[in-house]
Image (cartoon, rainbow, N blue to C red; front, side, top):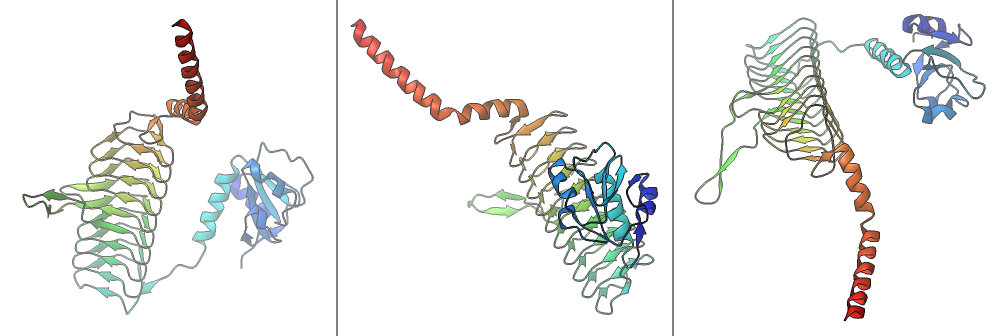
Length: 347
């Protein structure tokens, strides 16, 4: 197992060592679970008290941080502790052995094309006319449908299903159990009161550097494409409806739902369980708090909260009134009694 000294790590991160420059680490650990030989980080002030008791050998801290008590661990001061630790995590993961080769238990149609250095796991199915780029990793029990196109450096984790005709860009990660390109929820009522299915003949396009969480579903378009643009990050258990477009570098936490034909702008941030109705336009840099229900268009850079959602400041003011409703109700009843008493006196 490789070891790195504090001096080597500081050089990699353009940091400053406070303590033993030669102390070595070989693993990573949370600061509250530290042990000798481990590297941890401190970015959130709520965790500062762990710094004084951690058994980690090295702790990365912000350059502006000043400890209130003696610190036994060697510290490395950097401009951004969280960002630097994330960089080290990337290096740690990149250094792990990569799976290689094509499992004899995989089913690959003879018309499919695989790039160089690909891994295909057991019971994966790659159907007719599919095109797989270089350095892709396709884990066991993945299904890649007819004519699907995967770019380079794509990771498709176990149990993912990518339906026919969908397109995946470069450096995309799709986590276990996700379904890309299932039919959109399109039905039309008929004269008998039941529903006729509207064929969904479009596809899904995932652009470069997208990451899709586990068990997330992205429906294919009725016509055209449901499009997830470059750099979007979707958490687990998210539902994206047909013909939705999500702008670059937008992030969404678990259980977000976006109904069909809604257009979401760039650099938006949605908390968990946000619901967005269909056929809306959400501007750039919009933020929505957890469990917000958005039922109308939202302009650029607005913050929305609540259901139905309100602009952030208005939501907090409304919520303050709501919390006081029992007391306000009591006061109203008291005023009504006083008014009735005054009316009697006047008579």
